[in-house]
Amino acid sequence: MKKFTYFLLLITTFSYGQTWQSVPNLPTNTNGTRFDDVFFLNDNLGWAVNGYFAKGYKTTDGGLNWTEQVSQADLGGSFYFRNIEFLDANIGFIGTINNSFFKTTDGGNTWARVDNANILPSYPQAICGIDAVQGTSTVYACGAYFSPAYIIKSTDSGLTWTNTDMSAYANTLVEVKFVDENLGYAAGSSSLGANVLKTTDGGLTWTEIYNSNIPGEYIWKLQFVENNPNVIYGSLYATGSNPGKLIKSFDAGTNWTVLDAPETSVQAVGFISQTRGWMGGHNTGFYETTNGGNTWTNLNIGGNLNRIIFSNTGVGFASGSTIYKFTNESLGTENIDKKREDLKISLKNNPVKHNLEFSIDYTIPDKMVIELYDTNGKYIKLLTRESIYNTGIKNYSFNVSDLSAGSYLLTFHSNTGRSSKKFIKS
Image 1 (cartoon, rainbow, N blue to C red):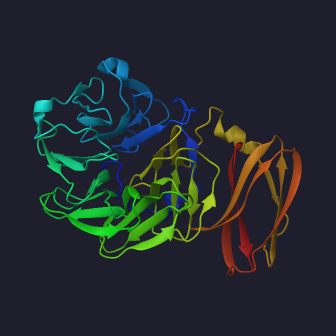
Image 2 (cartoon, one colour; image 1 turned 90 degrees about the horizontal axis):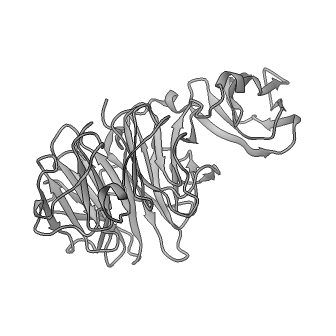
Image 3 (cartoon, helix red, strand yellow; image 1 turned 60 degrees about the horizontal axis):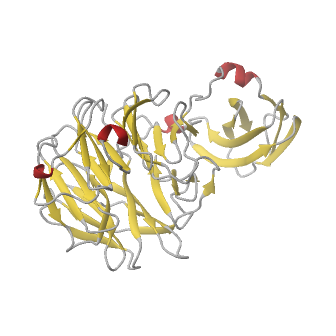
């Protein structure tokens, strides 16, 4: 399987019924700090870094269990871990904002600072973005969000690096993302505003392909969608009272569509298709869109988001106050079959002509999300999202006159489990 990347082969049924959940066995930061980054090579093997606490973790079972592999105490200094990326199962890198760049050759068990002499002509002040080109020995990294702007590149799996001054194109760089060894993008800000740069020759030359023309804004993250390098999404981190933005291009950056994001300080962006995706930032958890970013719904899940990634099987991970997983499995400690027995749902009419009516017998206080899908697993709409404070039977009625005749699925996701009911629209 490919690395856990922003190239995604979308299979709609994989996203059916999946939700964002905190992974077990990792701390949740409660002091306004966060896990700055998460990276997966496949659905099981991944790593994450906790920024302020400068700790790195590894999982081999898809995020169910994590092992702490490195901390700043192990490295003999005080660091902020900004990002993590692996070229393969053994060779990986941690970027910091403290004049230090670390490398492992044993899967993260031991780490060593990249020597100053191995990055020429000068050592980077900070690494804010890393991208390893899978199947090659080429790695790119960039910095810094607080300036100056530079890109470092290695073509020998991180043994030696060249540092390229990018001040002619940008004041700051936060993100770097490559399709292959030659075609890539970098993002950050110029004196004019948030900008995106593109290269087709491995970083020898660059062209600005987007600028917001509002000084002080950043492009914080970039993502390729649906295994198609022509489809690019980006998060624009705004300033002051300006709204954050979602930028997207369907022609490799020649033309861009710009839409309002759900908050000013939006940073994380992750789309599983050209219509369904999520954003979040310093002040929020997950906001979801099902129409390509035209409107957003607050899921009231997660917090302080910085990175969202997907695999080619539709499993997702995100970094924020902790690490979150987009999955249809239960990440709780109780048996999922037992929890499903607690959710008692009764359809009152089936087939349905105008109003879909049903009841749920809540045995404990809960949080409920009820959504509508077609029988192929394609998401249609959210019916309700609510907190349940009282036990007992609650009745529901939703007008579904706008649906075409046919079969549909109601999905119910709560703290006590996940269930589906099929109904027929007449």
